[in-house]
Length: 105
Image (cartoon, rainbow, N blue to C red):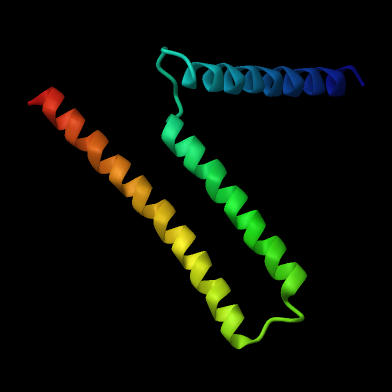
């Protein structure tokens, strides 16, 4: 029983340590300090999630009344959102890579 309690305590300590680190990094992201996370990526990820949830909610509510044309428009919007998100991430990678090359050069 004591061994099981120690394992649970260790697990809880690891989880609480990770949660504290995550919250600290999120707070750093919105301050002047360097953060592990990229503010742009986190915000675009949240926007992507919200858009996806909205699109899925719309599909679930309207699937019975949608015809093929409306479904194809819905799928096109899905691809548009995903493509925009990927493009923004690639742009950021390119800019960061160029900044690093300038610093090294």
